[in-house]
Image 1 (spheres, rainbow over the protein chains, first blue to last red):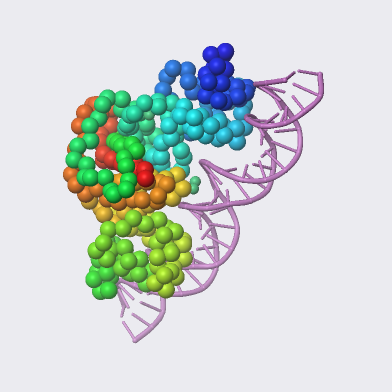
Image 2 (cartoon, each protein chain N blue to C red):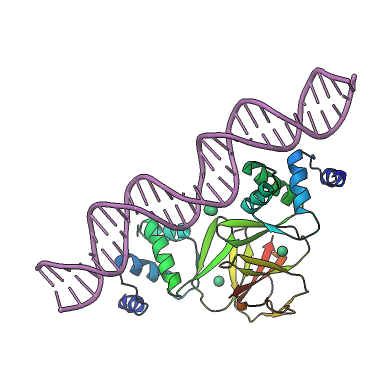
Length: 130
Length: 130
DNA sequence: TCAACACTTTAGAATCATTCTAAACTGATA
DNA sequence: TATCAGTTTAGAATGATTCTAAAGTGTTGA
Ligand SMILES: [Mn+2]
Ligand SMILES: [Mn+2]
Ligand SMILES: [Zn+2]
Ligand SMILES: [Zn+2]
């Protein structure tokens, strides 16, 4: 709890009640993929009612500060990922299945990068079926 | 034009005026990435005013029939891709830059597929910066 | 040829994730 | 403890997309 406060402060985020609860849940040591909605539901189960506006604000604040990654996998919800290492994903839209691939993946055979651009990140999504 | 009609019929799509115009634009031989909005704008330039509802309907009809691929790259628009071969993308959200990678790409080092699932498609997105 | 009907188009309303607004609240600071 | 910038929140707004239901059209069998 004081760890969390320090953690927030060290990321230039004022440790408010809401941020402490959200950070406490998100950064408990287990990697998580959450949406605003799923996070809200999860916190509600724990009797922590935080407005959706604050949940969105906080996810963005954490994202802006590099504490979360953002994943665009579906057109109707944004996932935030507590695993901020470089990694990839197995994903199934239909099954709402999403897990990390932490093994080192090599992507071979890329053509040369378009002029005046540089590679920021290579993202591999392994789409799964049943 | 009769080609287009045949093409639509052979995909069990009734060749309506609107579908003929849209297919004529989309399948002119050059690969394209369109959104409902960009397609609407493009057709309007050519004096073909088609309602957005029909544009959405048609993109989905074409997609359902395998004539288009769907790309989820941004949280606020869906891209449809006329290149239906297996391929990957260079993408920059900021620059609205999106081009195909048609070279064969190899992804090495994948862990084993999760139990009871099978790989449907491997998607590589190379995110670019300026 | 054409009536009949299933399929399609469309305007406008609805949906829904997300963002915005502006007022009340609170953590930090001296 | 007063002050104030930063934060939270209810509720409105936004915007891409989907839905509704009424009018229009391509197909086809007689
Ligand atoms: Mn949306
Ligand atoms: Mn949207
Ligand atoms: Zn992840
Ligand atoms: Zn493409």
